[in-house]
Figure 1 (cartoon, rainbow, N blue to C red):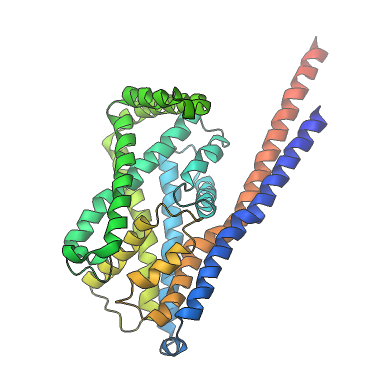
Figure 2: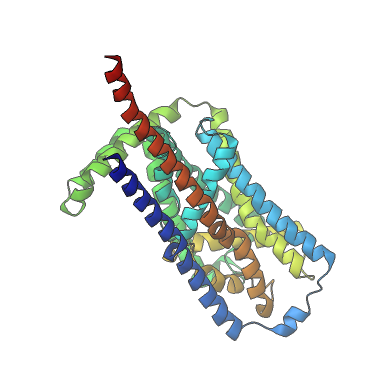
Length: 377
């Protein structure tokens, strides 16, 4: 029986590794490269590329872009350590963030790594109630960052963060429609979760369980009830946290998102010698990237592959020549997206192997213990 269980675990492990190494990684890469190939054919201008002065400062700024993104990863690990109340070591948090970001990279943007995070957090001997608290509170603070920071950006630089043609609020164009629709959806589900966590979790649980009585959702009845219970326990836990805890989590969240979007600033400064480095223009560059993330938040492709590359040239048309925008987009995606795809192929299988070994040791211990008890008798 033990051999059968071991073989079953090995088959499951091999199946998981195969899925990681095949379509889950290949699909976003193919989508991205197909779009890049099309844009190369339609837009790329070698004359514009030749205008780039490949000086030492270019390498310095590209290095800064990589450093910013590496620091972002460490900040996310710090946040996970805060949310788990130091249950995870900092090293383990770094590893788990790799898995979380990899899950985001191979999932449609509308689903994201959050949907997978509950699974791998629960595999690390973390209580399911604590894992649910981490997931739900992460959604709230992530959404809070966007909801609070965007009005501030509008005040600082105006409607130009929506797109290059947005000279005034009357001229926002199509970019604005998709932007405000996504922001509305983001605000709605964040408000729903916030209400459940901090105001009246019982009503939210009752509403969730109500959906379980509807015929279309009846097969998810147990899952919905478990989710409702998770909201109750998460609400209880968060209600006992002091203000300093929330300040630290929101600070880590804000830093992580700021670093993600600031990568583009460093890349553009590196490759566009005529770019203005004053606060207004750099804030505008930053705001455009945050806007692009929001607009691709419900893209159906893994990691918004294809959509991001296409949107980049349009959103930065007034800063970056069309002929060289694709090069900047490729470097940006290599740093912020493809890096997690490639790292995940190494980190995730290693994590799965350790998980399987831990399960096997646990099974062996439970089998040996009864035998020792029998011998003592």
